[in-house]
Length: 142
Length: 142
DNA sequence: ATTTATATTATAATCATTCTAAACTGTTGA
DNA sequence: TCAACAGTTTAGAATGATTATAATATAAAT
Image (cartoon, rainbow over the protein chains, first blue to last red):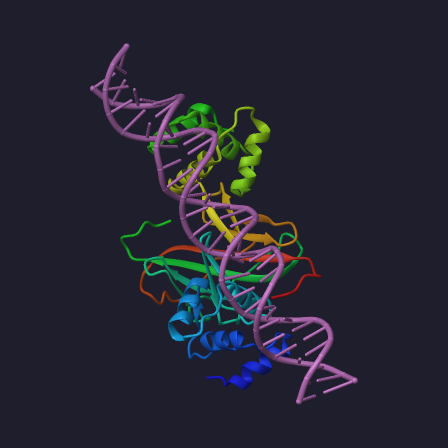
């Protein structure tokens, strides 16, 4: 559990003014024991349910993108119509439960290191992401 | 290079009527030596450039989704605003070149088998996808 | 051939996201 | 302390990709 003053310096250090709205969003996102996987919609709902002062949707978009650009959030794209943000910014992979639409973080106990034998382009690798989709037995296999 | 009659039976076998438009789209998508990675927009452009009779955008969307549902195309989501389709429907992974926005298929020579040690949910794995983003050295690492 | 189910089409509708520009707020430094 | 400025928030409009509609056309079945 982080304190408000910690969020303030975190924001200041990355050139973001610690506004009322951003601090509120920090609270929702980072004052947690476990990592948080959310869509913009989830976050907007969470805020409107838990605070009486509303935050404009535009601000929620701006803030999430600013936090992503500053490296405080990672974006995980599941499909063209489902994009999640993840408060866990360490290198890690995901399970995606197609029945519940829930993302689950993996650690090295669950998915081993991906062995890239050959980077055919000769360029620098900027990220490696593994997404394991799971579903109950009755679902189609693919 | 497949023949028209082969597309016709392919479509019939999966319960899709072999219409003029679908056969044209088959030609564009599957009459190739290499696999084809495309966005809906790429495909629409390709069709309008290479044929004089136009195909409605709605039909292009419908057909691509039908082909995906029947397993003739795979969807690869790169980010919330970039979704590609892939004519290579075998299990394989991708490099994504952030400089050129090109997807590149990997084979087992480039990325080894992903070792899933533990499927935490106890559900069936429906797919495993690896996306390796690459960029030139001047890009930010992540 | 006739009928029926399916597909195509242009256009409208939808919906998530981004833009706009006016009002507001945090920060700086006199 | 308090102006002045840059950065931020906001409601609402604009955008743009995708999907829905419903009329027309086509393929398949009888």
